[in-house]
Image (tube, rainbow, N blue to C red; front, side):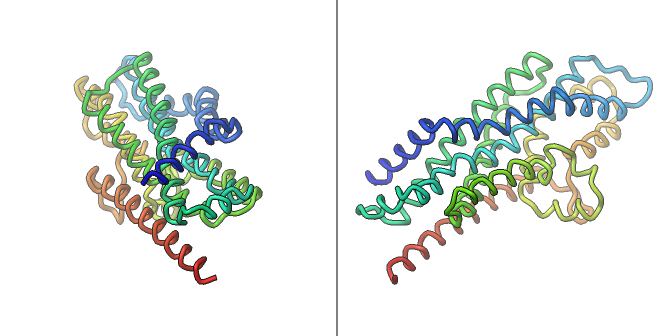
Amino acid sequence: MSSLTALIKRNIKLFFKDKGMFITSLITPIILLVLYVTFLGTIYRDSFATALPKGFTVPDQLIAGTVGGELFSSLLAVCCITVAFCSNLLAVQDKVTGARRDLLMTPVSRPVLGISYYIATFIVTLIICFAATGACFFYLWKVGWYLSADDVLMLILDVMILVLFGTALSSIINYFLSTQGQISAVGSIVSAGYGFICGAYMPISSFGEGMQKALSFLPGTYGTALIRNHAMRGAFDEMADRGIPKEVIEGIKDGVDCNLYFSGDKVSMTAMFVIVAGSAVVLMAVYVLINILGSRKAQVK
């Protein structure tokens, strides 16, 4: 246990000391903020305005709060995964530099070393994502706050579950990487593509039917929907209080992926949570298993 604790502390310190890895982990939040300011914010506002029925006027604060909730969910849904991949780069860099080989020459076993990378990645990613969450809360407080205490707590829980999922996914993929080129390639692919396939950059409802069916099998899709529901629930309740018909509100929810459907049936919030949490548990088990098998294979050699 003392060896595991020491390794976790070592990995966390190395991450924050390496300015390259730290800055890389912040690239996705920065890109999303730039996209919002220059492009996404206008699209979100226009799509919301066109969805409202004629004759209904909505205060600018409510519009800003609704759009801000969508931005909130988009930012965090992507960060929880992409930051985990960046935080996990230390495990690959240790292979490149030979540090992993040196560590394995000590009494530390391969599974313990693998677990230390996992826990350190989870802690680092959680710190960065909680900082991003705090910034999002501050933004909503400035433009339009409609969150209840329950919403805030659920958003924090959503972030933790998604970080667990992202850490497990990145740990499995990075386990098989061993060169700097592979690190760059995987990082670029994840940073550029994940936001699209999880519905953060563009709602899944705007894709074709075949693409919607394919994306409905991905856990990240439901992670985005979880955060989006909790970030926008208060704003939707305020719309209902102002007399906007329920059918219109449900239509808006469909348009921004608060409502997701699988084989024509609406997926409940509980089911979304179970899908994301269950996927995280399964991926963690897979990561532990490949570390154990890798250890046995090394002993045979």
